[in-house]
Image 1 (cartoon, helix red, strand yellow):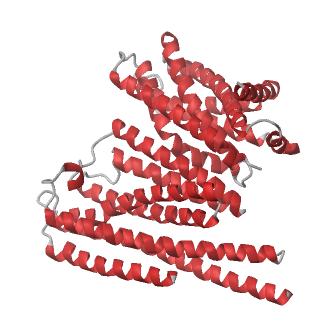
Image 2 (spheres, one colour):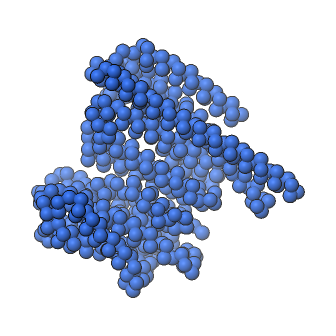
Image 3 (spheres, helix red, strand yellow):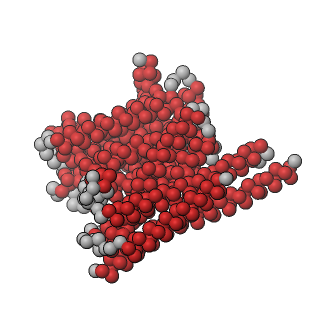
Length: 227
Length: 226
Length: 49
């Protein structure tokens, strides 16, 4: 049943992506000030947002694990963190490439890039922690604790670095500015690509979670056989 | 009240051990001085710009020295199953964490003031006039660092590669704290007049301390359960 | 400038897809490894019994 869900998600994502790529490359015009490079935004921004949302969804499942003790919640939390780290990396790398053209430097210590990097590092540490613990219950407990610390800290990181540094482009999406800053056609494509990337993320997380349950099955078989 | 007494008991025990062996103090202190020495080769130490980067330099030194202190903090409980004994005792997990954090805090503060003294000499920066505000910043920021070190010391104590995992995990988490401490130290050393910016960073330090101490107390049972 | 702009846009898209592709490949490899391990352990258990 789950395979079917994953395939359905992946297929929907593929269709959306194909449509969006067509829009991005063949329909939408170049941006007035930036030229062609702006098209990166269609992957850069959704990847970043999906990554951030992912960390907080993982937080929910981490807390749920601590309450319920069901290891499946831990598996889901870990899978979502892993996928979110991948998307945050995409966000950072594409942002860096865009910055090279627009700002002339591969890396600029502005607050959004820096905060994303810090979040990526925090949760990369999470992935390292999980690899270092073999016992599943202990791993789940300690991962949940780190997820809670990581998410709370991410909020503080974002706010504090925002006060500390600031030269990223300001908000242009309608939900933050109330309209008028971005061409509606572009914004429409951006939203559609956000959906596409969310679907990809969900599919990947489900696949990863399936692997986690296989690992648990192996673990319990080994223990039953005293291997 | 019981909780406070228990935490102080743990802190007193750790500090007594530390005073007797001085292992963390020596290690962290020498490490800090060596780094200050190394950095003196990285740029011109006597110039004016030293006061600009002084804050950053000091807090990087403190963060690295802190890692040594935090690693020892729980690791010293491993031989002879001391950690299991502590957990089996009537001590609450939270008081254990807070107690260890207190001990780390005191140890790290000692290292910091020694480093400040050496820094003033090596880099020709006068700080004696600013001792009070500096002490306040050091105290606040060091508490944040210590509580993170204590709780993550507990998390990583039984892992292989503990000495590597602990810094890798806590440094990104500490970043808002370090930024605040660095900015405040820089402003103090540069003699800048009190500004709303200073208040802002001070508030961030306090928020960080309160939030993470609360989280540590709430999660200590989850992390230290046997 | 136009050509450079376009080249970098291409790099950007390439980077995004490559990162995700690398992750998918690593997932696939982990999947096959786990499946094989499961088979091995199942065989081990059935041989014992």
